[in-house]
Length: 256
Image (tube, rainbow, N blue to C red; front, side, top):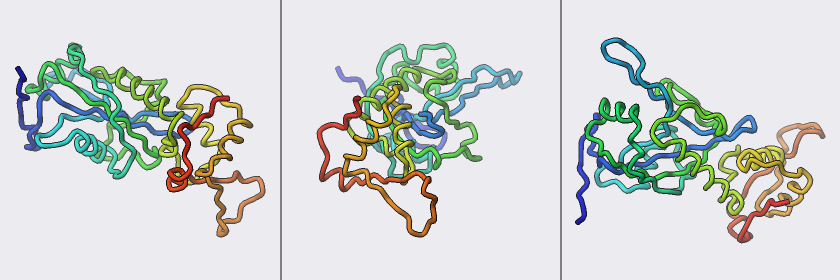
């Protein structure tokens, strides 16, 4: 027999489904480091002020009534980053019955979302952004970038969700030009190599990497006649989606 999902009203009066959610793993890249965007979660005792919970979580939310999964993920990203038209892809579904069983997570749920089901299925989404466009502000003062290899204490099963997203990102990076989503529009080959090394966790031969990149027609050298640069200034490139679609191969292979 198929069980019906219960529907509840959240604080802003929107109805949500109590056992289906989305979690967005937002990756960014700067200072030659792959990072993930997290939000601090703090719960204090109302009487004593004692801190009961202090950790970090991904950006996520329950799916609203009448809302598609992809629309829910886009809503979460818009609320957290303020950006539109950023890379977003569904990559895995997390449905283990014990994913909410940690005592601190149970306390958080009882305090803030008591209507939540004991078994919540969360759909994971992978998102790539230029981290320079997202900075903590007054509305998101508890949001912070963390290197993927220096994660803080995390709530729920969010460590596993991040690791699964990192696996998906590495897999796709070999096969599709998604890494450019993490770079500024104009980038150097050094920046591009640093990105691949940071995501893949390997060291690439500089000469071979550049040789292969320069053979790719969708990576285009640019020049700015309005800007006087010295001969030693690094050359900059752009990624052309249009050229890629016309010339793409089955695989971007940087294996040396």
